[in-house]
Image (cartoon, rainbow, N blue to C red):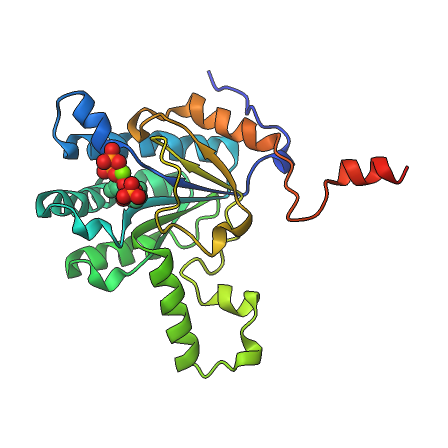
Amino acid sequence: MSQSNPFPDPTKLPVHVAIIMDGNGRWALKRGLPRLAGHKAGTENLRRVIRACVEFGIQYLTIYAFSTENWGRPREEVNGLLRILEDVIDRELKELDDQGVRLRHIGRLEQLPSHLQAKVIEAVKLTQNNTRLTLNIAFNYGGRDEILQAVQHMLRDGVTAEQVTPETFSRYLYTVGTPDPDLIIRTSGELRISNFLIWQAAYSEWYVTPTYWPDFDKQEFQKALETYANRDRRYGKVSSAEYEGNHA
Ligand code: IPE
Ligand code: IPE
Ligand code: MG
């Protein structure tokens, strides 16, 4: 039996949700399993959360899968994470395509093994005309790296000082074409940005939960969206309700 969408009012739903999928290692440790088992469980959970996004009508989902700093982990773990990305493309691409998911990659592709680069490019190309959900996979992504790349690119293009506006700058970021995230979720309780979307997050709402990523289920995702629906986004101004009250 299909359930009705708990978010019938699309104006209360974030257009773009970004997730720092954290806590896989601790999830595994708690069970006496190797860290890679935690990453695999995290991938299973990602599949569920993508389905929920499609069902609820989220338009953009950005997931932080591997940071520019994660190269500093033990070689075995780094190789395992690269392999997981490859497996996900091999095994999930068809279902993602069937669900209407458009895949994009954000980050430094050229530092990945060449066969993996080719797979990512192929997956992006195959799904480029899908419109239901845009899924940005941040793999080998760093916010500082993104900003430096943008500056270098602008200089190479001969962009003048006067032309450097927020709009121009945003067009040089990996996220070009994606609106800024409305809601950023971080699992596992850490209260830091860890180099994720540092430009784009200027006015994002945050939801942090102690739940480890592999356990962050549809119910908790729904709770995050409900919390978001009740936030008052002021963007440095005063809330419209208060303003109207004072001037009635
Ligand atoms: C997040 O889980 C996934 C990646 C960073 C690749 P972690 O691997 O950071 O898990 P913890 O934080 O060690 O528990
Ligand atoms: C952030 O998590 C990166 C990803 C989720 C891919 P980390 O586990 O790498 O972040 P820190 O080291 O706790 O800041
Ligand atoms: Mg972590």
